[in-house]
Length: 339
Ligand SMILES: Nc1nc2c(ncn2[C@@H]2O[C@H](COP(=O)(O)OP(=O)(O)O)[C@@H](O)[C@H]2O)c(=O)[nH]1
Ligand SMILES: [Mg+2]
Ligand SMILES: [Zn+2]
Image (cartoon, rainbow, N blue to C red):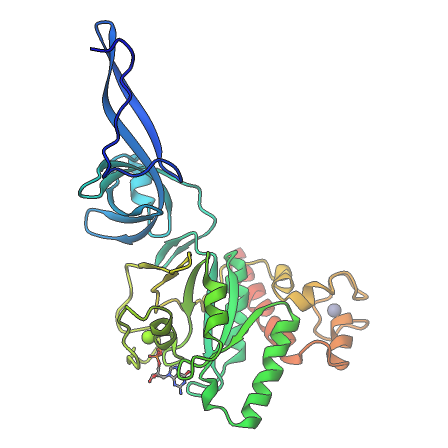
């Protein structure tokens, strides 16, 4: 028997060392010799699916099925799809392991539970269903309030008459001037798809939008090997007939994931102080401090810089209208809490 710690021989079917794989050694002292009794391999990955007693973890060495018994009880309850975790691989043949640690999250949505989402993609159409700019602006405020980068996709562009295309162009330019990322796509012709896919790589994205705008059609182009039901009727509210309780993250070939959350609506704004609402409208945020009154809400106060820019056509009047509507709603909400 050697008198030194034995160097463990990692069987060839084990993970290769490197990348995010770490090897730890649990040694036991037996008389005067060290004998490596166990090799613990920890690997970092992202939870992409929740199953009955397991989570499916996507790692750069393939997927593993991991239980949460390595976690404290309070952490076991909160772990969810999207979380980055460290796992101990307990059986490399069956690709099983246990989760040891949850990494800190960058964002969290609770309905459906989803951690570390980086961007939300609002799919809309000019017609079928008709474009609702107020809902679009609410969505943008909502995404920013949750610290998620919003992306706007105007789909079904193959269906537009020249005049409709021109007015969409005007609207898209308003959003682009504000600094938003905008794509014009068609799931029928594939137009705009490469640009949208490029934007999704290395990010964790979720699609949102009304029923019928073409979310499933776009996803079926992005993931040709998966099945998506098109034209699914999803109830009078457009929120779907059944609530999605479990989310799955679909890995993209070039890195990144897209969540299959058909029910992500984002219509309920989180509580935000009304005076902060302007900071969620980039073109209004840029005017902070430029109005005559420093508490100007840009409604009809004298010396309002925002009104001046609306007059000169630099700021879209409808954006300011939507801002004011949300501002007043938030003010009302806050007054009600005070009662
Ligand atoms: N002409 C045209 N039809 C589309 C486009 N995208 C989706 N559709 C159709 O619109 C309907 C609703 O699409 P679907 O993907 O199910 O919408 P979802 O409810 O947002 O998932 C289906 O019949 C699709 O074939 C598009 O870009 N152009
Ligand atoms: Mg769908
Ligand atoms: Zn003002």
